[in-house]
Amino acid sequence: MHKRLLLALMISAALGCKKNDNKGPLPEPDFFVNEDAKTFAEIGTIDIGETGAAEISAYDPDTKKLFVVKNEGEGTAAAVNRIEVIDFKDPSKMTIIGNISVQPFGGVVNSLSVHSGKLAAAIQATDKTSNGKVVVFKTGDHSVISQINVGALPDMVTFSPDGKFIMTANEGEPNASYTTDPEGTVSIISVAENYAVTTLNFSSMAGQQNALMQKGFRVFGPSATFVKDIEPEYVTISADSKTAWVTLQENNGIAKIDIPSKTISNIFPLGFKDYNTDGNEIDPTDDDKAYAAAKWPVKGVYMPDAVAVMESNGTPYLFTANEGDAREYDTFAEVKRVKDKTVILDATKFPNAADLKKDGKLGRLNITTTLGDTDGDGDLDELYSLGARSFNVWNGSNGTLVFDSKNELDKEAVKAGVYDDGRSDDKSVEPEGITTGTVGRTKVAFVGLERADAVAVYDVSNPASPVFLQMLKCGDAPEGVLFIPAKDSPTKKSLLVVSSENDGVVKVYTPNTI
Image (cartoon, rainbow, N blue to C red; front, side, top):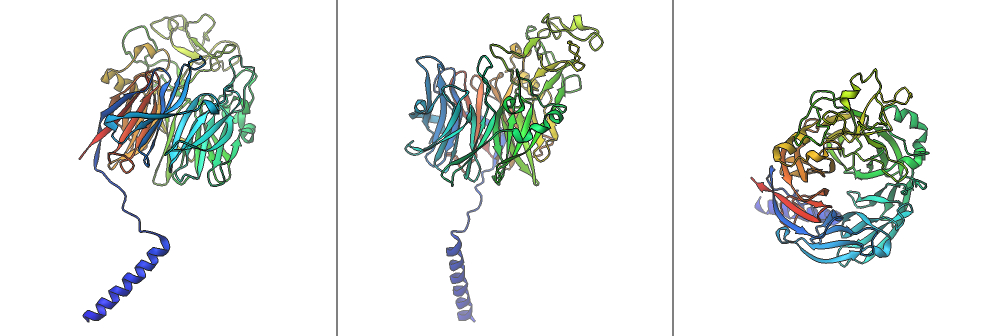
């Protein structure tokens, strides 16, 4: 019996080896560190420049390098346009070890993404209304792999999770005089097909313009056409690399894109937020030197900047940072204060108009003049401010609102002593960057607050009911919010990298283990 058993084991082992040889090595179990998501603390900082430096960061786990956008002195003879390369082996002792100049490729570099030893950089043209480029470098020696022409003003670039595609949101902003307004587009680059590119405009959705605008989508520039007025801002891609979502910030919408067919399948208009309801109270004035939230007859236009997707129970959830962004050009500026003499409030809808226009009331609040005249008689029947002073969760399949943080970001910023009352009249804490990740067993969202100089951390294990965990102070005007999972981290612990564009400071945070 012993010999038979031994023979059976030998045969089984031989068969097992043969099967494994055919399919490659057996997968290792997922890397896991038991971490406490509410205990992030700073472990490292580096200053790489002044205003315009440290806008966006990307990390390469193969070389343990951190790549950081550095744009300083734009439009001057002393302008610096390059990618700073940082040794990230020890995040507590970061050092600059080189740089990659982007001047040979055009104008300013706006965004970075890394996958499998490749660094993709989104670079706008010297004339931002002309088509820009994605340049792909090797992360090892920084040599150029490919240069790909994309649409005008590529503002964000990202690899798909499987590394097979690179996508850019090409904002297509007009020139200062608004005489040239390029199409807003999205580019899909196929890595395996020698970086072949397909650039999509939004002409296929133009027939839906009226229906979309009735639900809060905006098309409003001078002599605007649907295709030219759309301004893609940020891209996120599903875990299976088949679906992308693109924020259309100025337009107050999110586009859904089918990557395999390279088609725009839907646009979700985002509607508006009512500041006259419980939980949505705002402080609309910047001259009271205090946070004084109350209900006001004003609506917020969500207008998200960054977006991140997290899937739960088969549903894709989109997390958006609702920054808001005004169009302000030499010949067209949409924003005015409520107290401006040219802002006329409808006497029926606002019987207390004179009181509302006072500085201590709504007088100093910045609003858009492109919305609110519902009956076309020249006065405003409704008031709309830009942004929503919050982050949202949307259903990525149908665009329905799942969660809004209401005014919690303001309140938590006040508690942490980082609220800037000087921004109450505009977009408050100004949520701009957002990313998600898993810390230990907890799904987490990190929300960068540009005007509070802080990052809010939330437990989003239940996407319909996120729970605030902590507020992290950072550099001046955080733009890039990068999460590095423990399995890719040089410390083998989760890391949060925050890059701030107003002071060039990059900070790194990590949680405690349990």
